[in-house]
Image (cartoon, rainbow over all chains, first blue to last red; front, side, top):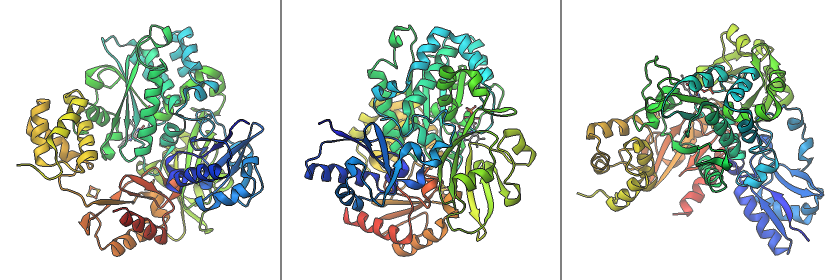
Length: 424
Length: 156
Ligand SMILES: Cc1cc2nc3c(=O)[nH]c(=O)nc-3n(C[C@H](O)[C@H](O)[C@H](O)COP(=O)(O)O)c2cc1C
Ligand code: SF4
Ligand code: FES
């Protein structure tokens, strides 16, 4: 009989509440019972309030058990966990968890689904299809697709990504760079981390496409040092990509060379600002540079550089796969596509919710978040990290749209939403 | 003079791993912190020499970044998140509890423990969050904090 596939996330939040201990316990109990299992350490689906969320695959369907503890495992096995048996922790099919079904998963569609450290698993779910398609389309058409999609930078400023790429593509230089901002510096945000831990190759693919589009042969990922597990996963994913010919010279026989170096930050918030990040990547103190020149003209080591946030880059592969019209049909006004909102703070169901722009804070907080964890009324909501604003309960019906937020004196930033009740 | 904990050969190996590239200074210092826990004066001299950068230059970089401690930390480093999501779930009271139960003030080292603030561990949906010796923990009630500290002490 084939081994039964079980899934235990290896993701910072899940691990922070016991996922590693659960994985050890599942392996131990399975062995003691003589059951043959395959234990896969997936990323998180983003329903963080249910973590640790453990799954078992039965007849090709994945059944979820939520808020599992190591102490539950033996009992779950006795209740027939490997056949998806009834147990107090059993939720049902993972794909039918309401929190997850009602999302617009454009960028995070593989998070939770795949084994982040398996190139095969990534390939089976469209992985690297987009870069292959990009090679066929040619650099110019790729940039047009990103521009037509209306994709704007997810790092906070919302600058149109297509324009940035076009500027770097048009610059002539012997060397150009792609620098990925993975500082995840807005406090109370974690979408970059969730993507890098759950689907690191999606970021790698986004950087490959950017590199191909602007003719850059080298990329950097600047990761904050507070994420040791992310670093481990990302470093392995980069090695895997290199070993299987998706990074390095003459990628898959295309004639395109591209490699990525992983750099760590060192606990400076300022280094999330793009020019300070460049200084840090050059081995210096992270002091903000005067602009101009813009990094698109004189960036890293004085060369033309595309600087993009993790989620910006990771949104690109599906724009190439599914087309810019599909992306642009999501969202409202000049805020196209989806944003990965992060619900945190005093909220019942915290986690990641990827939705098209135009949804309101109230919908996110009530329909997904389930209100405050304390059960008390919401007093204020912070959006956009420490550079953002506190939004009073009366303004929760403002649609999430970059321009509409500017009108109420706020900013969406990286999509972090922190709820406070009336006791603070 | 040799500084306790600083091993010049190990340091040389780390520098060579990065190809002694001057632009890798931040990365090398990060690797030093992981290996030696802090950056002694001797390391600064050593790096300046090997990377062909001035000592003042290396000093400037070391003093700029929070991660590059110039004093040895305790055997264990306990960091408590003070950013917004954790605050909304009681990180202030957790900090007080930690400080009282460990007998260490914030930013201080005592009884082998360094207690520090941190501004977001990316674990905001499991707040309040803390980090003990490079491992992140979430949903940390006062009781869970005491258990985690107990386990940390047992590992000594
Ligand atoms: C103080 C400060 C901190 C910032 N921190 C981050 C960060 O952590 N991550 C990020 O992607 N962008 C951050 N930004 C925005 C970057 O400067 C830059 O606009 C962004 O990385 C560009 O990528 P994008 O166009 O894909 O958004 C920060 C900006 C400022 C002023
Ligand atoms: S408050 Fe603490 S963490 Fe912030 S700069 Fe001062 S010492 Fe560093
Ligand atoms: S706010 Fe504490 S982990 Fe993010």
